[in-house]
Length: 334
Length: 111
Picture 1 (cartoon, rainbow over the protein chains, first blue to last red):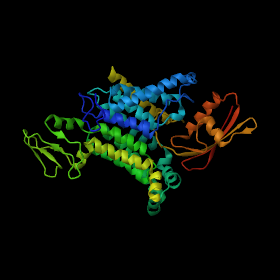
Picture 2 (cartoon, rainbow over the protein chains, first blue to last red):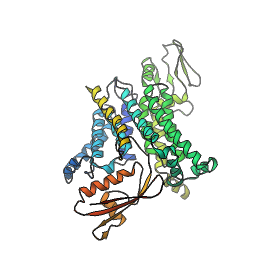
Picture 3 (cartoon, chains in turn brown, red):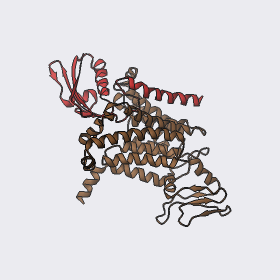
Picture 4 (tube, rainbow over the protein chains, first blue to last red):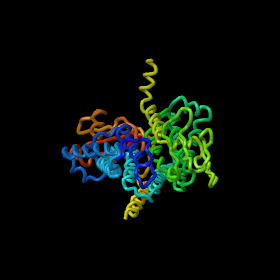
């Protein structure tokens, strides 16, 4: 049983994917970002048959208990695939019970928990397909919307919905219409590209970095308003698409991935002395003397594979975005 | 068997993404933030006009509010409420809304 080891490498002995790490992040989304405390009784359900469950308080108390047990189990790593599956079922049930609870981020988190629950080695593709579906749906729907092609959506977005000195300043500089049209095209192209890119399985590190930059860019453009939820979810779930198999291969050859963050040097693969490989002095790159291929590309990739650093990065961004008004108030009071 | 189940799971999602292009409502179509609509709901039951707070509580919707997916979701919730929980109220509902900052429009419902 894995007790809370955030930096532990892999969570199933038969797979290098950091499933437990991502499951924990999804639970963090549920309890912290979404603030999901209870399973609520039906109200305007998608399937009206669920209305018959209204008034059954004992049922919802029981579901609350199951929810929190599942949350705790995933957080401590106890039989987490089963409990991730259970959480997914509760999420789907909650959404079906109430149109007001419908949100794509909530459903997406449920889908990912569902897939983590069902995962077996050889099914690594399921996470890529789910990510592709999300980006494809988002891009495809915008592609066929006249307000996106005319720039109307972003004109309203910049001027009325999320006005701030940054985007209004940009609009003043290049023209609101031009900026709106550019952002419309950029968003559609990026989302559709990400959908196909993740399926191609090429440049996996670059894919994750692009996802991070895309969503971080949105956050910066709206000064933290839109959308730290999607930044967190896409950062967490795209993490599963990194080349963990290559990383596992290194570990099996006697390399040890350090998980400490040393301020003087980045975490580094340390070579077992019995094998003949070179380690650069700056710990930036390790070259294999046998096949001549770079095993780890650069410091950034080393940092990306470090779960502690990754966790700290995405949680910090969400924390700052979510509590920016409180932080600013604190800052002014000081 | 598991692979077949997963293929069905993904196929349903893909089909929903295509299907919502032909419907007013965009539920389950992976369409976040496609449309930003502001709205205000007015409800009259008999001779009484509900306050914004009472309207908000009635439908569990912010009033006035903003819908980041599709304005038809608001209409769908109001319609379902009036046809189920509120079917004996004979409410008259008016939603004044604007999609993506365009000219205000009106949607009405009466039972």
